Length: 210
Ligand code: URA
Image: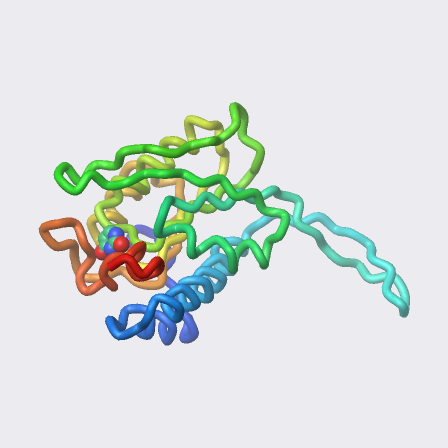
């Protein structure tokens, strides 16, 4: 049973695109396109509670009572696999700020090591969406939330594509206040921390470096 802050989308478009994404025959160009499209759909779900305020708009026919976003959103891609998730979501929210976090997983210890972080002293956004397609051991995800909380971020959400039960559990245990949005939770991690069946290395498959 998954904790109730873990939202796994059963949306048919996401599930269809996920099968293409997993396929080992999918080339990097198509792979990037799928990452982009799935990210937009997941972000649609992850942003369903953004704050709105009423606004009156003059149409050619009269006055319409409308609504506009009141919260500033930060997209936080985790380098490098999270990069492919940014662009599509950014098109939907052109006012979002993008703050990159560089963390890599030490292949020996499987622990995250931070190598890039240019966050300013005080938080500039009200809602942070962490973007990283693979929630594997959860070490990087926990470390990213730690960084954002230390920065002073108030509302943080995690948007990934494939999760392992181990990573989902670890992120939830460390940060139960952070909702987790995923397309699927897979069976397990293998002995080197890859998700099975997963899709392989999401960075290599996007950037053609396998
Ligand atoms: N990162 C990946 O790219 N793939 C995995 O399966 C786990 C971590």
